[in-house]
Length: 108
Image (cartoon, rainbow, N blue to C red; front, side, top):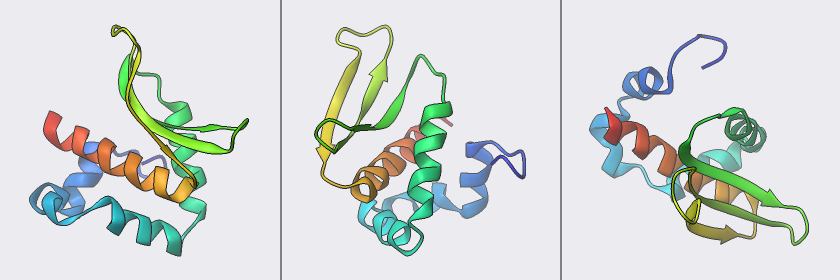
């Protein structure tokens, strides 16, 4: 996105994801991340750079070395919902990506 100055929507459209979304699972994404582990850190940076009043998030709790994926909404009480804990970054990142790309797809 940064090198080509394209929106996430435009990139997903180019990949054909909108037509094949039901054939792509978090497990498929995890397999791809396993082949290129540096992508996990890139996704964590992407999430850190987001400044949205509501969005999916992917975070690490350094105290207990757990990763969390959930939905943040500044207007909701509580602000965080759909929270799921993961023991490793790859599983959490795969779940986050699937949630995020589905949010993009359904918002089109």
